[in-house]
Amino acid sequence: MHTGQDIPRLADIQAIRELSAVYNRAVDDGSVDTFVSIFTDDGRFETVGPSGPIVREGCEALKEVAARPRRQQLHTTTDAVVTMDGDEAKQISALACFKRSQNAGEPPSIGWSLRR
Image 1: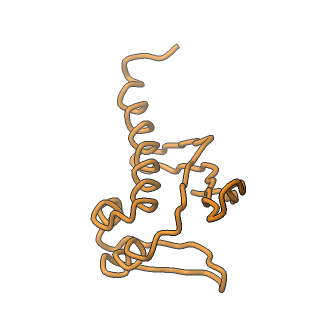
Image 2: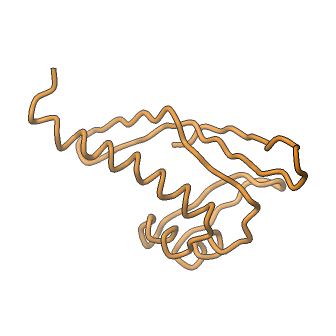
Image 3: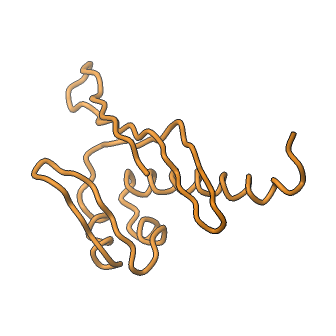
């Protein structure tokens, strides 16, 4: 049974999950300002591209990430598990990236990864 003391914790968990959704939409829409606003001034973005790891740090580098051309993609996260320890929180979720086909009738391609 949850108590009134759980409400701030549950609100924090929901805010973290919503941040993932805002991130996904900013990436898909190419919304530079929204994407950069998700990070702190010394924010760090890490991913793996076709030629290896990609790391960008700081606002200017993050703007470059968000401004790159869109490829008709849709990112979505599922199965989010948020753990909290004081003021620290971690989220682990599954990330699915759908890429629309350029050919009518061809199904979209799908990629999965685990995101923290």
